[in-house]
Image 1 (cartoon, rainbow, N blue to C red):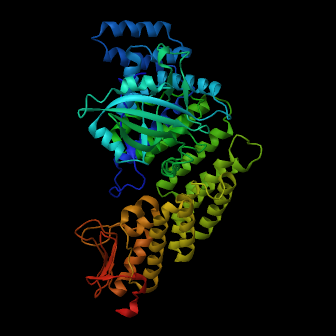
Image 2: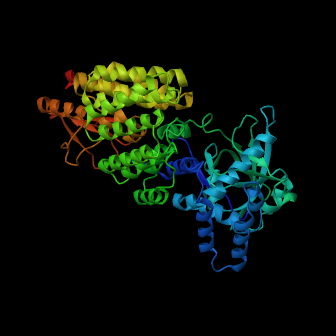
Image 3: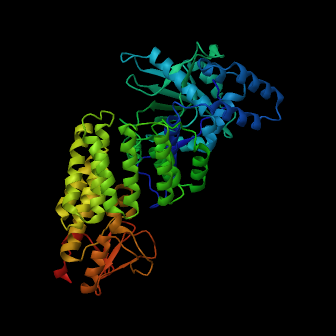
Length: 590
C-alpha cells in the first residue's frame, strides 16, 4: 500500500459561499476532476506517441538518478499493457511520478503520462468487471495515514461534505495492515494517526479492484481505486490515540447533485466531441495561458478520421479568442478530411455545418448561422443517416432557437426550443439536470417578451430539477422571490432584487442579467436588450442603477425620491428603514 503518497485533502461542502463570478477552490477541484476524466478520453484510440512522451518526461526528472534511469530503460524494453498494475506497485519511479503529476493539477504534465494512466485505469476496469457483479455485497477497505493537523481539521470541519482524491488510491482489505501505517499516535500533534474506513456500496459503478494477483506487494491484500474518486465524509472521531474517518464512495450522478450540475454545465455526458467538452472545462478552470499551452501540445495528434478531428482544429482557433481563426482552422480541417476521402460521411458533414453555424452565431452572422444549422438539421432528419444521434438532433434544435433568440424572432425561438425540449424530455425524462439550461433560456425569452409569468414558470421548473430535496428549499425561496420582485418591478417600479447576487449568478444566467452592475457611477455600458428596456423606463420615472460601497449587494434600482437597497444581511431597506414585507411596498405608497 503506497502510503508514502499521502491523500491530498480536497473537500467540498455543499452550498459553501464564494465570490460572484470567481471560481473558488472547491469549484476548481470539481473541474479538475472533470478535466482528467475527459482528457483521458480525447486520445482514447490514438496513443502512437504517448509512451515516448512519458519516457522523455521520466528521464528528464530522474536524469541524476542512475538506478531509476535503469528502471526506466527496463520499462521501455519490457513493459506490456497487462503489466500496468505490476509496474505501478514496484518500489520505483512509476507510482511516484504518476501521482506527483496528478497532484500538480497541471493538465499539460498529466497529458504526458496519459499512456500509463490509461493502461492502469483500463486494467483496473477489467479486473473490476471480473471481480464484481450486480449481486456483489458491499465491502469495506481501509487506509492508514499520518496527516498534518491542518489536514485533519479540514476533514473534521467538513463532515457530510465531499472528499475528492485525484491520485490512484491504495487501500487494504485488512484493517490490521492499515493500522500499522496509521501509527500509534506518538507523533501527535505534529502528525496525527488517521485510519480511513471506506464503505463501498454494492451498487457502485466506480472503478476499483483487488489487485493481489497483479501486485508486487501481495501480503498487503491491496484494493486500488482509479484516479479521481469521490467520497462522502460520514464521520471523523478520535478513539484512544487514533482518529477514525468513515467515508462512503459515491456516484456523482446519483448522490451528488452539485457535481452533476458541473457535469451538465460542461456537457460531459452528452454525445458530442470530447474536445468541445474539454474546452468548456479548461475555460472554467480559468488559466488561459495553461489552456493555450495544452492545446499547442496536443494539437495535430489526432488522425484525420478521428471523430474529434474537426473539433480539434476548431477549438484550436477558438482558444486564441479569434472566430476568424477558428473558422480558418475548421475549414482547413475539413479540407484535409476531404482530401483523404472521396466521400465524406454524414457525421463529419453534420459536425462541420454545426461548427460553422456556431462561429457565425458568435460573430453576429445570424442568417448565415441559421443556414448552416439547417443544413445540419437536414442531415439529422434524413432517416438514412443513422449515425446522427437523437441527442444531437435535440441540441441542434436548441442551438437554432438560440440564434432566433439573438435575432429577436421569439415565435421561431420558442418553436425550436419546444422541439428541443420535447426530445430532451424523451431522452432524459422530466427531471433530468440537462433540462435546466433550456428552461432558463426559455424563461429569458419570455422576460424579453414581457411575459414574466411564463418566465417564472420555466425558472421554477429548472429549480425543481436542481433542488430535488427538501434540504434545498432555500433555493426555491430565493428564486421565487426574485421573480416575484421582477414582476413587481415591471408593474410598480418599486421592488428590487433582494438577495445576494452570488446565489443568483451561480444558478440562473437569466437573473444575472438583472443583477449585474455595469459601472460604479450607475451609468450603463453597452447593455443587453432587457437592460436597455429598464434604462429607457428610468428616463420617465427617474430610476437609475447604483452600486453600494460594500460591493456585496445585488443590482439596485432607486427612484428620484425613494432609495431602496438589499443589505448583505438579506434585509430590504427603503430610505434607511427595514421593510418586513417588501411585496407590500407599491408605487402608491410613495
